[in-house]
Length: 89
Image (tube, rainbow, N blue to C red; front, side):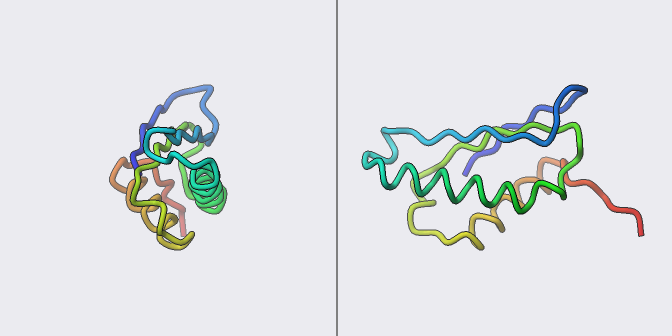
C-alpha cells in the first residue's frame, strides 16, 4: 500500500482509495482491496490528526492479506508520515 498525505485547514480525516485495473484485473479483487482499505481507514480514523486527508493506493500484495495486516500497514505508514494524533494522558 502507498499513502499520499495532504495536511491543512479544510482537510478533515478523509481518505481516497485507488485500486488499479492493471494491478487487479478481476473486479472481485479490486472490490476486496477497496473494502479492506476503507475498513482499515475507518477503524484507524480517530487516531489521525484532524487536518489530514490521505490517498491510499493498493498494490498487488494486498490481495492475500487480512484486515489486521492492512490495518497494521496503515498504522505503520501513518506513523512514518507523522500524521498520528498524540493523545494527552
